[in-house]
Amino acid sequence: MIPLPGKGRQGWTVGLLSLPLLAFLLIPIVALVYRASGGDILASLFSETALQAIQLSLTTTFISTLLAIAFGTPLAYVMARYRFPLKRWVDVLIDLPSIMPPAVAGLALLMAFGRRGIVGSYLEAAGLQLAFTAIAVVLAQLFISVPFYIRAATLGFAGIEPELEQAAALDGASGWEIFRYVVVPLSWSAMASGAVTCWARALGEFGATIIFAGNFPGRTQTMPLAIYIGFEIDLELALTLSLILIIFSSLALWLVKFILQRDWGEVRSTPA
Image (cartoon, rainbow, N blue to C red; front, side, top):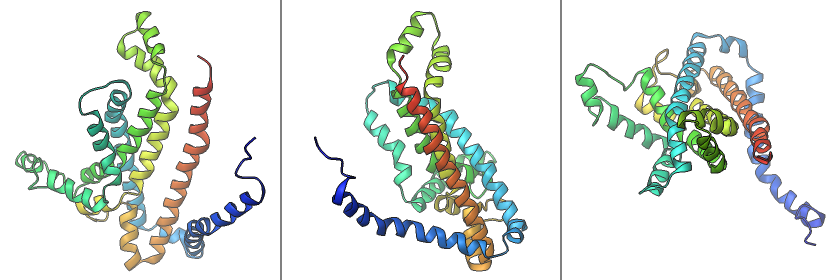
């Protein structure tokens, strides 16, 4: 019998070697929370700048997440169920924004949808400007965060036995009915997990937003952008907004790791 790596002297050695990195990850978070809790949180929280940034962040991330679900779900289903030419290249394209430097992503969006962009110039001629508006904030968040939803939804769809869909089709169900009553109920945990992760990533988006949408208080200044300005002007504001983002991020991770993934595991382990 092969011993588990977590037992005996070897387990203690591996555990001790893990402590430095765990401490490195924990100490900055503890320091930020400690420093923020020592200031006047309520005064900073209810300042006009903070309220505008929070409202804009929650509104734009809600919209960008809805767009990710609406347009990412069909693409995720196609990636999970069909084979087609250049599928691997499409797969690379889907993941590319998530690993692309945010500043590069922002510049790419500006070159595409800015006033002189290859698409934006036509929109400008039609009287529609996207860059440096709240719409640009949504587009930047969507561009950076949608791969997280597509990837999770794809895994969820791929985990469903094709025989279940075929059986529903033999019973006379239409394609939409199969998707609504078979696919979605069996993969909702994976889809919800992807949506939460997508929202959390959009909430923390900074680089692409500041280049494509700018940093205008009350118009395009999200919480990460307000933290950037607050670091130079009002440190208490920056610390307060950072604490809020940590709370939101922690809640999102808790929801994904301890609720949705558990439910998804129960669904996959349930006999058909």
